[in-house]
Image (cartoon, rainbow, N blue to C red; front, side, top):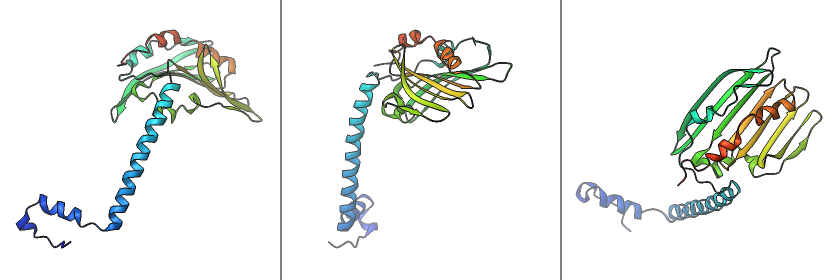
Length: 214
């Protein structure tokens, strides 16, 4: 093919189309391979998304619960600790929106706990697994000073991790396939973490599971 083109005479669109036809065989093969990889990735993502969606309860939320409602579910205080701060926000990017509320509690001896509630909204599914991988995995690990494992609490999938030397740890629960309740503590006992987690009314969270769902 003669690829010499008079851009002034032919205008703009036609030369661009002709130039596209002047690509080498190597370029065409590379582009075809990229298209095939992209299609394969898309199909794999859809398959994983379906599996993850089923594991997460099949929830397809389009709008998260208002973070102010999540803040109302945070306990006023914990055993021996006063609430020192609370905040909430709704944030989004690329069409996905997430709501979060959290509160911090401290005691006179320096121990502290943070309790947070996150509504993953439309992110529930594959994207959420990057942060909450324990929701689809079985974990049971011990070290000289602590452990981490998946568990069930009140019928909800959960995760806990604790270090006896630092007396620090975390616990999380997945509620209704879209809400994640998390507790993190420092200089506290395992029982204190469990007590804090139990102070969140997960029944009310379950009652919100259809908010924003189409």
